[in-house]
Image 1 (cartoon, rainbow, N blue to C red):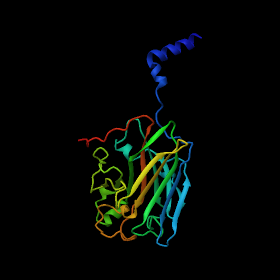
Image 2: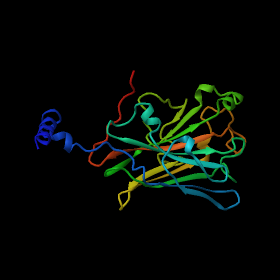
Image 3: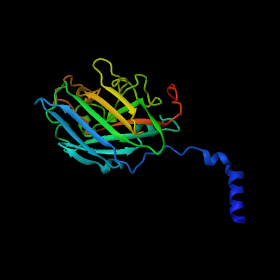
Image 4: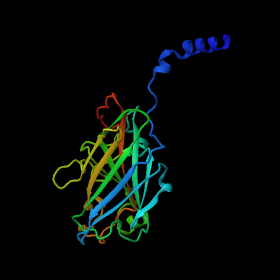
Length: 255
């Protein structure tokens, strides 16, 4: 009894009751398995659909889901690495790799094709809300292939964003390695949205015109499939906040 009383007193003095009442750190429920679906209408008039329930892991844990595509689900992302997240937020990303780099990413794709990515069943350890404006498509290109296409090898990352003012704290540059606002739903752009479902899970839906898979600095003007350099990988990420936490206002780039 004396030990229990002492422990309670120490917790009260050094931790305070606020420590026990503090909301937990926002984390993904890694026991859940989000459903990832990628689809497009091919030149053959057929909708090509590849989907799977994925366990959370890392890029190396990707698994084939159909055709030339392997997919993975993971916590963390580019926004986190660049220090462009809310201090109480969490970033979730869902990525796709070419299985054979020399083949097209998408079967029967055409220059006007729209790639449709849907993710459902994202569950966190507490009530949370997604921030659609934070959605980013991050594409990665082979440095050797960039060199062959006369694109500087330091431009192997490319970012398509929802927010037209997105700079990720000054770490991406419009016209160099980024298309800010390319997913804002305007005419000729891609679109993105997210929501909390009735069961408390989070879903995300992103539509990306195939032309946006072309590097912004690729000198080739045509976007016909097979005539320009495709990425070897891309992922789509979103920031999620605990329910009731106010999003941070966009800030000016840091020096």
